[in-house]
Length: 90
Image (cartoon, rainbow, N blue to C red; front, side):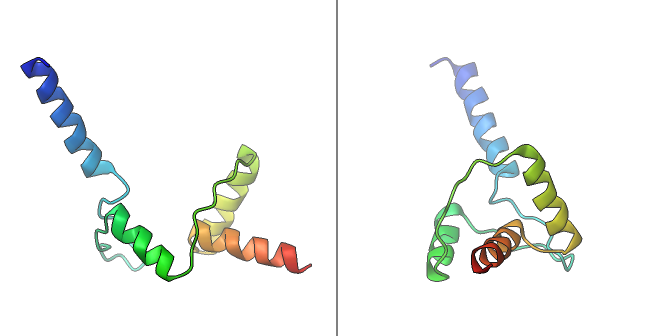
C-alpha cells in the first residue's frame, strides 16, 4: 500500500469515528450524552431484554413514524414498540 493511500485510509477511519453512531450527541434536555461504543451499547440493550429486529418498511410509513416520534418527543424505538404493542393487543 502506498504512503498516500495509507494516509487517506487513516483519515477516513478518523472521520468515521467522529461522525459515527458512538459520537456524542445532544440529548432532549440539552446535555451532552455519554459516549458509548457499540459493544457497550449491545450489552446495555441485552440487559434490558432488547433484541435487534430489522424490517423493511415503505418510505412513507417510516416518515410518518419519524414525524410522530418527533411530535411526541419519543425515541423511534420506543414509538415503534408502543405502536406494535397496541396493534397486537387489538
